[in-house]
Image (cartoon, rainbow, N blue to C red; front, side, top):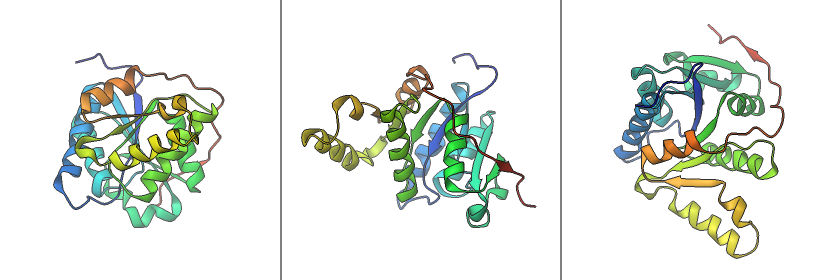
Length: 204
């Protein structure tokens, strides 16, 4: 097992608040969370306690690594972060949520999810493309969930809307350990100062 960094480095995971219709989505989240902790990394995520979010967070915590959830105040009640054992940071907007998640993380993994997951993935890829930061981004693609998206990205390259170098910013792997290797050994140079955010205490 690789030595644990001190202080903890953390990987941000974008994923869904729902479990999906097939059990392998939740199982992948558990496998990834456990492996993340065993590789000596903590987790930053969207603070939900259900679905893929809840599964990955519980696996990281069970394996002894720290978890930080970040959530806008408006979503606090809907996504039930109070049911999680993670540290929860409440912010005032979705923009502040993403800015803080980006600032806290050394890289980004993407698991199964819906529109929010897709939006977060594309925004962090765009930030990489524009040079706002340069941190590894990996789709954990066990079972081929992201195959249609990868095909669309290649179509953009073929039609001249996306440079091959920018396409390469979105890596993918069907293997958890390989995905983690890409995240922990990828380029991690921040290109500029992170956006400022203001956090507040979680409501009680």
